[in-house]
Image 1: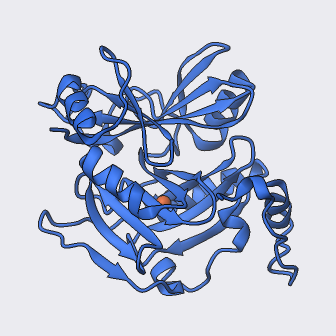
Image 2 (image 1 turned 120 degrees about the horizontal axis):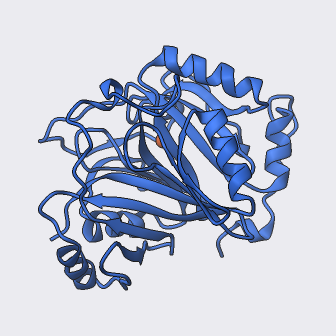
Length: 312
Ligand SMILES: [Fe+2]
């Protein structure tokens, strides 16, 4: 048996842990909980941490960590994962495995929350004003949506929420939030975004004005997703090769939710209309340059992706 409680943290590699830690803290209002030259831990609120930064020559995703629910031990989770056919390492502090695309996953044991209050009402908190409320979900690009859905539903025990088209996209949940994991079918395998819940659109406005003052730009948004219902803005993170989504007002599902199949059209993506530029799905230099100067909106199509970015 495996029962997840929540998305615990995302770990990103960076060649400059101290620099990246200061940048994430200043720009996204995260609180630095611990830091040395090899590793930094940053939190949204009074959770242990939501973002881990690890020293590494190549910037990008290291792993995503999921916390087990109370009553589900690491040993039970290991037995379940091995029964599924996954390779599992580690034992006392965390399990390590990989999803169907080879993205590293950590499973960490249940920890009693420091307070019974909801995240936006906890005190005292070391987090600065304007900080996000929680790390809410991750989104991966994948060449094999069906295989990834099989892994996240059968190996990790997530529940299916919605499909886009045949299998162009899939959204999975743990609790009542519409999703903690989203999978988008593309030619490249890549972490697309980690998503912070920002309470409401007023908080999002403050965060986006702040990010704009620090030279950040949106790859897409604000939008109102059809699938998931959340209002979302996607901030390009050139340094760690991903986006940060700031979101609020995600659809809350009843326990008896039946998965839906959404048409693959612009309104499933954005009930307010515009689709993202194609650069939004890429992390190569040409895509970033195009997006930085809004070239697609100026009528200049995005050049083809370099071969290394596509899956054979
Ligand atoms: Fe998202």
